[in-house]
Image (cartoon, rainbow, N blue to C red; front, side, top):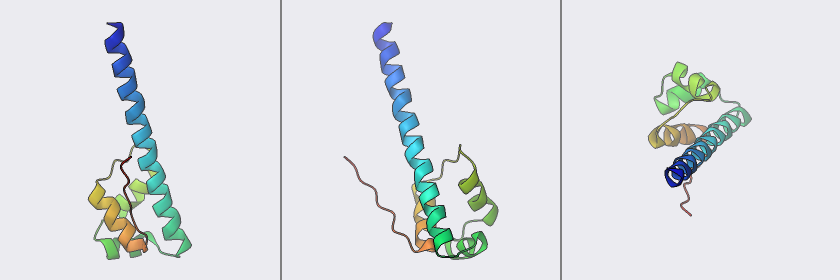
Length: 86
């Protein structure tokens, strides 16, 4: 039982770390948008993602966008999305 408990806790920590990195990515994309003076409406037009959804992604700490969504937002802001596997 103790061995299983350790494995579950490790998986939970890994999931939290992945979510934190996702939230950091969303905030970096928001910062890129703001630096370029782009509105959510402009990003919506450029990316094809609904403005309300973009707003939720920037505000909601539980947001869980797909890789495709992140990529579309990055392109719309003029940023480059890079994924590194270590």
